[in-house]
Length: 487
Length: 118
Image 1 (cartoon, one colour):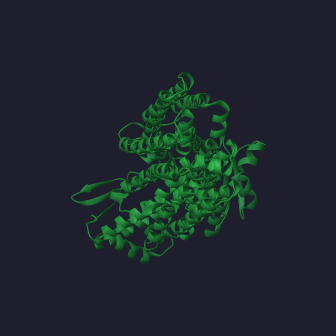
Image 2 (cartoon, rainbow over the protein chains, first blue to last red; image 1 turned 90 degrees about the horizontal axis):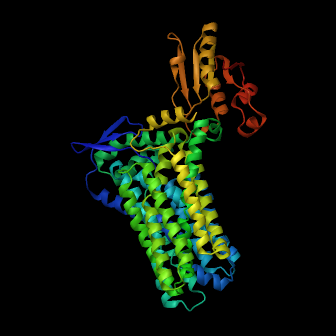
């Protein structure tokens, strides 16, 4: 999850920090190159394996699902259940993971997550029945949720301010790349060994490799200096900083680390009692709405069920799993465009434009499924529209919702508020994943996508009437504005 | 002999701040304001000569506003009056979101002045 960090400006090579409330902070010496930058690079790579696992474990089910369904005898409901239970697990994992990493440390948490990833994966691979599979998918989900809460925090805390944004961005790209990688590897495995009943077990097994890399790698990684400061372990914090910054920078940054640790402590002040304040409640409704409508685009239905969807559209089993790779590819391309556009376009414009595009492509998928005669042409039309939907989604709504969640809440309630919104987002994700197969089975592709069109129109109304513009405004300005407007 | 006011983010909260200043002037003592809002306190409602110490909520221990206020009452042992703002709540309102003022009224170790917004 992104965190709102402060910006910086370069004055004669020294980095001048601007705080998230707009005031000027310390001026830090530049982080010159040295052995420590090499180490920092390795740390960033290893930690992003957490994001990769997140993507891989959520994407691997796509492609494994058909053979799995045959092998374990799943109905459309149990299919949805097995897929979505991971997401329900992630909702809980995100809540619990955040608290655990505050209590025991980020590094400790990531190591624990790597072990849970390994146990969950092996449990799924060896599961004799769908009930056992569902149990271990739930366990995997806990790890996925925990990783989503801990890894971006660790990365932003260990990186120097001037690299923070790009390192956290890289994590988001790693998540979709993990899904993309899962699609490619599944396609290869299926086309080579597809005739075996248990081919899906091998597909799921691949995920254990990055988990091992993450575990072994994290063993040699330092703890986050900011967390150490929060525990009162200043000496250890300075030692860690010396490992990943130039010597002058390490000393100077300690004050900055203290300040950020203080800010983090403040962000945990507000809680459920503060919901009695109307403008806070309103902001939380907006945040929850953004998350839920993001999931109601059905983007994750495509990420989890893409192969089957394309199969229903008219592709053969072998062709569908290969065509599905395009979904992964355009997801990665989309998010790269989205991250580029992020601060160049007004938020409301980008959201409204994004939903307009995704709703249009939903409509086109529905119309193609309804009106075109069955055959290769119909299959390709649906493929193109689905891929374009994925691209537009990841290029606008996808990253933008996370950004806005980090921006709209006042500092003191941020931790609680984002926690609530993220939980709602995961639940919406899980609900769509649970319902997609039975609904497509009962109604067919066209009516299902027309339902998405209706949800998209509701989203447009919601954004137009409820969501504020936040680009270019400082936290103080936003807080004053919200208090006035929403009281 | 000080007066401590728990300022919530509401009309009665804002009113309780000026009422507490009046009370402090009446008793001839100083004022401690515990900021239960999520932003900065607006001290412009107070008279020029009022001496006020503002205490902020910080961190997870202060998540429950009632616990935060009770902690401050321990930190400032010479407080003799707690001022809170109250308004009429529906039964559902009280049940769903609890009432900070109600709990403070019942658990406060010192006398409580409950003021209603005009």
